[in-house]
Image (cartoon, rainbow, N blue to C red; front, side):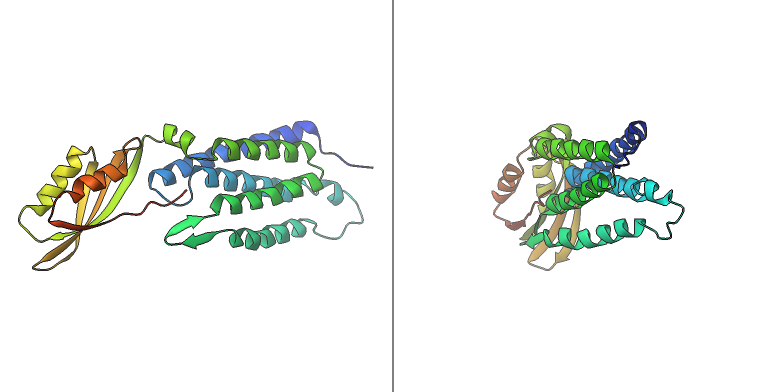
Length: 233
């Protein structure tokens, strides 16, 4: 006979997953502002997957542990699945030319394993509800259109190589200010009699086209090179 966990308990555990998702979203929001590779989507998936793994490990084997002649620790199976699926997820992450892809796919694989463990443990409602939650998250955050509406400001980082002339730093700062780059911080990385290299850090509105800022700086003949690379979320 199938031993199904009480529905009231599963609703309580589902609340934990929702809270974990909100916490993951908050962390991912901060990381997205900093232009890190793992953004809102990845943090949400990892957070609620971890919560589901923990619930399965803690409550999913309660029916077996009630048996008087049971002399084993069934939660070890869950631990082995968590470790094993991590290797599979790592294989989905690719790094090419400073661009990282596959993070959300790897997190999705991890979440899918957690869902399978939940349903296999008799937590049917929890497994199905988490599947729907994962599907909605993946659909809503499939591209950056929704995230772009939520995140108002992002980091703007470039490296500039210029001719070492008087007031070149003032010229760069003035141009950045004219293009609405806020909280500009300029650090000199290298300087010679002829060349100077700056690292520029600032904050821009998410609606501003970064390419236009770079092209505005390129109009100055003393600026010889601008290096900029965005990191995919």
